[in-house]
Image 1 (cartoon, rainbow, N blue to C red):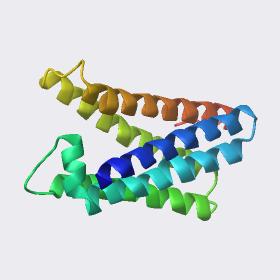
Image 2 (cartoon, helix red, strand yellow):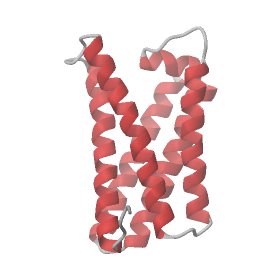
Image 3 (cartoon, rainbow, N blue to C red):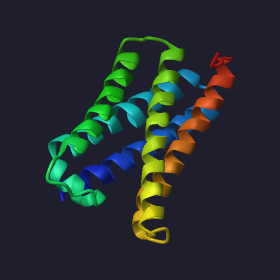
Length: 164
């Protein structure tokens, strides 16, 4: 039950963060857009994901359909989210600059892309493509990731940053 509440709050904060980040970006306020996405969509969402996967690992595993007698996978995922959350907090509060924030968002988006692919793979292998699980986990994660990648691309173009 707690894992469901954390997931709902996490999705709400991530969505609101993306909305306001895009709003600031389209208003030509690049720094505010990056700050919003960095702190909300990576930092807070990462901390909530950490709590859900590590502290409430049993209910989170049930929520995801990954029930196991050992919580090591949940711990690993929780610490990965915590790592990105801490990087987001460091870049935000440490004023590390635009490029560090872009890399933080890009790194989290790449991590979440593999999560979305894993959910999709699971749905295909279990023949659950037209299921609530597929829509709620695979599709929603991939849409979220797509919005993060597009945001990064727009910011990089506006700031004239390149990957190489």
